[in-house]
Length: 110
Length: 115
Image (cartoon, rainbow over all chains, first blue to last red; front, side):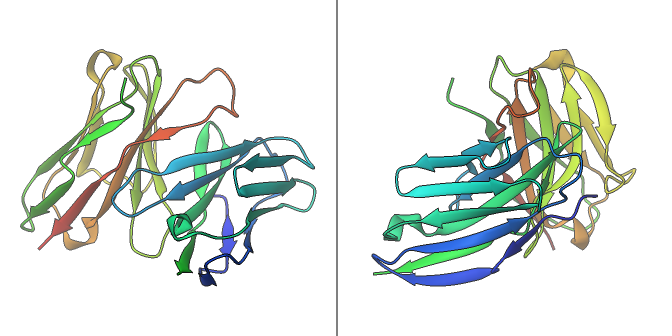
């Protein structure tokens, strides 16, 4: 079992503010790092798959960076909106399976 | 194709009863995964199939759990003699494995409550 940690566990953001949170993963035998957004009563939605050290991905107001040498990834949300409220999961690929962190639950207050 | 579908969405069962969940993956995907999520935790790997072959089972999967994927299409996960500790969200995912960085598409899960 590979230890993937996310922090903080939860955060509250005022609408319009920007925020970021962290995913830490084993730096050895790295294959890929995935970010998912999971809204209540819906399926986890794939945001990014990142494979290269220094990778930066962007989707609308959400972006992510990857540091495989030190084993961390940041997810950024710029100008948070209420629809950004969700649990954000990161997952580390090993042996074609995913090892997930516990998630960061983001609540955007209007 | 509308994605990965799971049935039922919710299941409440009495302790000791058997339950079966179904997952219909994206048709062209060759791998199918089952994960389980309990409160406050991330999804944990249970088992996966490549086509109809079950390639790996987690040690989390006790003998009461069995999964099948006949003909490499849909999959079922059965839990026999359910226990309260089996209460969780059961997620199914599928992928087309050509590269380790390929994405996984998840269903919306089956929430099991054992009373």
